[in-house]
Length: 190
Image (tube, rainbow, N blue to C red; front, side, top):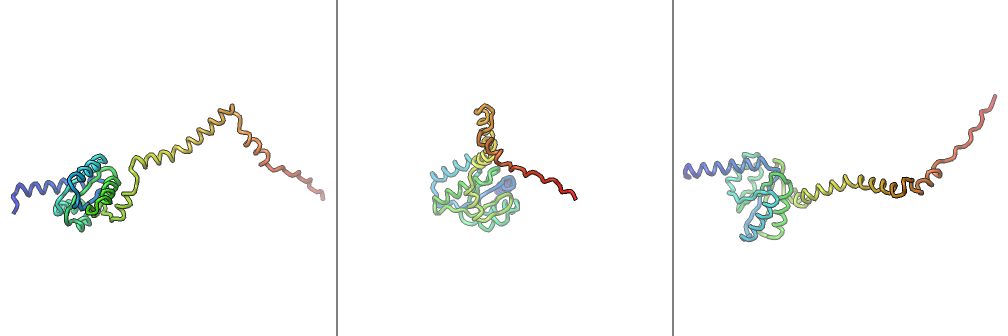
């Protein structure tokens, strides 16, 4: 039977884990066996730089925290060596980094994950891992918004460069486009 002090520490760990699970947008549970300390250090550095919190946890403690957070389906994969990466802001960072790492090391594998409070399957985690970073997505959106504005600015600059005159091709095409009107016949008198 554990002492009261140890039991209290475990309750605190479960409470902290529950809070982290509830206040995050995404998380990935992995089986970390088969990696050495140097590789683990590199992995932790990459996750830390992306703002992801990574920790090795006991399956029973993570199971209790998952149930408290409403992520009961995570309990199905909690066996063997388990670590969890929790991302408070970025939906894709944990999946992207851990999936890339799992591709490099055959014994390291992704077990499950969650996204916005719901447990997701492995194909969903793989799809998240293939998404570009938030910065790249924002740059792409900005470029999409900027393209029409830049095109308009180039057109205005072309008009200014020509001294304010309309381009010749447009001026010549306008009269040809208008069909000539047929003269109206006078109404016949009866």
